[in-house]
Structures are given as structure tokens and as C-alpha cells.
Amino acid sequence: MTSSTALLTDRYELTMLDAALADGSYARESVFEVFGRRLPLGRRYGVVGGTGRLLELIGRFRFGDAELEWLRREHVVSAETLDWLADYRFTGTITGYREGEVYFPGSPILTVEAPFGEGVILETLVLSVLNYDSAIATAASRMVHAAGDRPIAEMGSRRANEDAAVAATRAAYIAGFAASSNLEAGRVWGIPTMGTAAHAFTLLHDTEEEAFRSQIAAMGVGTTLLVDTYDVKTGIETAVRVAGPKLGGIRLDSGDLPKLVGKVRAQLDSLGATGTKITVTNDLDEYAIAALSASPVDNYGVGTSLVTGSGAPASGMVYKLVAYRNESGDWVPVAKNSDGKASIGGRKVPVRHLDSAGIATSEVVHIVTRRPPRDAGRELLVTLMSGGEADASFLGPDGVKAARAHHRRAIEELPEEAFRLGAGDPALTTLFV
Picture 1: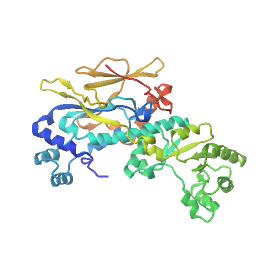
Picture 2 (picture 1 turned 60 degrees about the horizontal axis):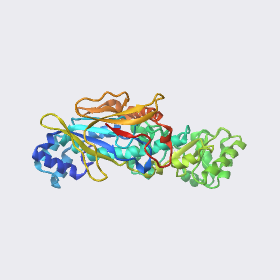
Picture 3 (picture 1 turned 60 degrees about the vertical axis):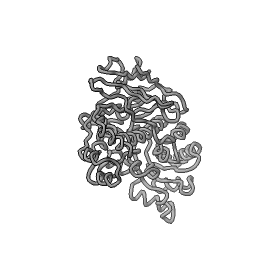
């Protein structure tokens, strides 16, 4: 990963800046807003992910000598714009939903207030982070709910590029996953890591028993043995004979899991290994996890479906200019009116309304000009960055822990229909007033 994030953007961001610098409009105070017009695949709620990562990346959005020289050589922008970029620092304000918060169509998830030139060139970076991380967090949240009180581990690194794998692990942990196989995610974000052995370790040894004895010698009887390299029934017999009835766990990575898990539990119990846990890791998603709800599974491991957003690898969020300040000092709302892609102009204050039991009933978005509204609901916007400086409470491992805790609280507010896995309407209606 490069130290500068300035070229993680699209060319047209800089060519817009080039023209705005030439005509003077670059300095006009502006408000950009991130929102999604709809939820992916008919899902009933979304989860905001990636905010803490984004704030750190914006902090590194600098045009150094290498970036400027490349732009000069490729004739991307004028010499005057290159001079402006050399001194670029984001100095504006960013407000938004807390990371881990739930959102709905039209929710103003993130708002960037800055001179046009400063804000416009952040578009691609903002969307690349929020679109992916929120998709993963949303899929992960659905999986966690389907699993009930059974922990889920993230195991998808080999199904994503190296940077996306770490981002996905972070988003999944915020949404409630218990641990990850990814060590870099553990190092950078403080996420618990786990893992024992793969089929290759069993195949390396002359017999399955030799492999099990080797793993137990290294990790103790509390380890989890992978028992389906050859025959599951024989593998379990061997595992318990080698480790004894105190064997920590066995893992199943193949087979018809709803049928197999019951047989495995019965076999383990018959061998006296009543405390041995069963972990399943065979191409799971939220639907497969829900189908196993009546089976005696103790832990899940999810890979491909997690890092691909369980069929929705992007959240469909957009970054639009919604207001600017005119020469009189008044905010002027602006909006796109394209067919099927309309936006709603104006600076906004979103509030979530709750009933007497603390369950959310609607999301009300107030369009404001000068003063914020008085509303008894839960206000959703927090200040993430002020004067170009990020609020440290949202950064690093501590920020991840805070986002995870906030997600638990936000999920508890949702009505029960929000957790149905079948396609349906959003759980809350977003009202603009």
C-alpha cells in the first residue's frame, strides 16, 4: 500500500478541479453527500462500514513529488493546478453516521463540507471505501443474526485481493464476527485471530493419525482437528483416540452439512467427547447458516460469501453535490434530476424515530437552511473530521471496538422484520421533510 492516497482517484476529479481553478469556482463553499438510492438485492437494512479507514486515508491524501511528476508527464492538469495540488490539504468538515450504524435508502451517510476544489477530488476515495466496506458489513450482519449466539470466524482472505481482505475482515468484525484468520487485520486493527491446520497438513503425513498427533503435540488437546480429508467417521474415531475425550473441536469443510452435523455430534458423544465443539466451514452464507440453525453446530467459518458481500460486493452509494454557498452567504440546494438517478438537494439532519419500546419506526431527514430542527428522535450525525483533522476516537483499533459496540446497539433498535432473509422492502421508511 502506498503512503500517499492522492492517485487512488479517477482522472475526471482532477480535470473538474482544473476547470474550477481556472474559472474561480473552486473556492465556493460546498456540501457533498454520500447516500444510496436503494439497498442491494432487496435487503432490508444496510450497515455503514469503512468510516475509520476512510478518515485515515484522507489524512494521507497528499500530492508528493512522485504523484505531481506523473501528473505533469501525463498532461492530466495544467501547471497552475499542479502548483495548487502540491499544497493540498483537506481542511473541511466531515459529518456522518457512526461506523456500525444501520442505514436505509436516501440516508445521508456521509457529508463533506469544504471548498469545491477540496471536496470534489475526494469522491472516488470516499466511494471506494464506503461502497465495499459497507457491503461487507451488511452481509456480515445478516450472517451474525442468522447464527444467533454461535460465533462466526472470517476466513476469506484467499478469495479477495490483499488489501480488500484486510478491509473485509475489519468490516465483518464491526458487524459481529468473532475472529479472523487474517494476521494483518489482527496486527493493524486489533482483531482476534484464529486458525489451526488445513488439508495440506494431513496430506503431508503418511497417515491421518500422524498428522493429528503432530498437531496436538504442537497445539495441545484443545486444538481443532480437520476430520474430513478422507472419511469423516474414521477421522473422528482417530481424532478422539489420539486426543482423548477432551479434544477441543473438529472442523467439517465438506458434505451435506445439515445431515452430517447431527451424525457427527452423535458419534462424538458416543465416544465420550461430549464437550468437543463442531465448526463448519463449507461455502457458507447467511442462507446456509440459517439452514443449520437446528443442527448442533458450535462455530461457523465464512470465506467467499463474506468478502464478496454475499452477492452484493458494492453498496451502490453515490457522492453528490447537494448545496453551495452563494455570494450572499446563503446555502443554495442543488440536485440531479436524471431519470432514475435523482438526488435531493440541501443540507440535511437525519433523525431516527423510536417507539416507547425503543424500536425504530422511521428515519426522518430534515432539509435545513440555517438552523437544525428540533426533533425528539435519535440524531444520527456525528462530527468525524473538523478543520481537516479526524476525531481520534474513530481511528485505529479503538475506533473498531467503538464501531462494533455501536453496531450492537443500532441492531437492537430494528424491528424484527428487518432480519428476514427473503427479499423485501427496507425495514424503515425514509421521510424527507
